[in-house]
Image 1: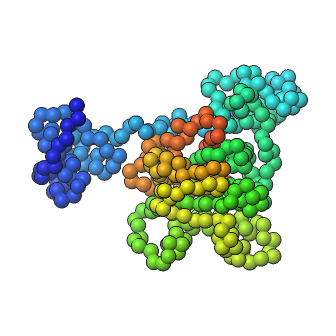
Image 2: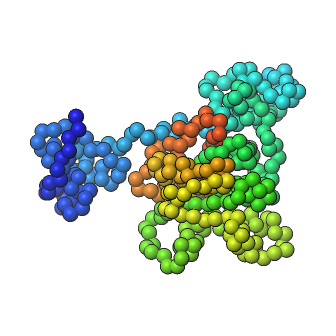
Image 3: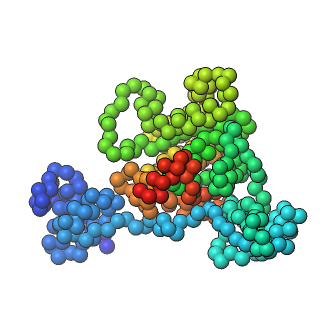
Amino acid sequence: MLKVQIDEDVPLKYNFLTSKADHRILGTATLLQQNGDKVTFVSKDINLRIKAEALGITARDYEKEKVKLDELYTGYGEAQISKEDFDYFFKNKYLPGNIVKIKRDLYANEMFILKDTSNNSKSILVKYAAKGKKFIPLFHENPSPWGLKALNIQQKCAFELLLCNEITLVTLIGIAGAGKTLLSLACGLQKVVEEKQFRHLLVARPIVPMGHDIGFLPGTKEEKLTSWMGAIYDNLDFLMDKTSHGNEPLESAVNYLFESGLIEIEALTFIRGRSLPQQYIIIDDAQNLTPHEIKTIISRAGQGTKIVLTGDPLQIDNPYLDAESNGLTNLVERFKGQEIFGHLNFTQSERSPLAGLAAELL
């Protein structure tokens, strides 16, 4: 039975001001409880749930879209195969999926290291193709998009997902300093500028501050976004510096990408209603987005568009989300197994020894 309760001005303990809409909701819940009803207060706002508990009202988070982080699909695994199977793979360029003994479901575009049981120093990096239920070699064995080379196996796997045209949705999550944004930008520039597979590289981030907001920013939309897109500009400077060879000032090289329209920086605030065909889209810090916002972004994709979402579920600044309820982890759980989807969970930091220790210890 659905019951609609008319808002009433109910005085609350602890001097909670009834002029606030949140407190009026708590007042209504208090009134219902005083009248003998069994009341459970459901909200994604942790501050409001704490206030409800202080008032003696049972409070719960919205559980439907929660994902257990320790059980989240990683997109990466290891297994052992016999020497005969090892040789079969090199001869036939594939290996039937039922040969490899893995006691769980396999998902499309999942990466695996297959090790030779007779010699553990021998291994191959493969990708699972769900259509043929087989393991196949990577399409991009030794990529160096925009002059960038992989520093570990996980980055090599990420390159495969980011460079494959058949994979149109990619999620990269993991610890700070793993290279998620840098790898995505390098592959985006490679596909847009060098290979001309896409018309534009569109980069966006949610406008969610870390800590206290500094308030309104002066200037045009582009000037305001400069403050929010510092991480993007830092990575672009690094990538352009690797390819300029000192022939052109770094600032001029970066400005050319924007002035020519090859790169566009956008706030997610303005993305609703847009249709974005033939674009390589990178959504950075996507852990600060709700499942509804993620759905809105992905549904903007037009024909021939690829979307990459990066983020760290353990670094969330949105007060209404946590590591298990944000849109990024929800997306991974919903899309795993789809042939157009690829995912990778990074566990190694390559930024610096200090950044790696901070990610591990703090």
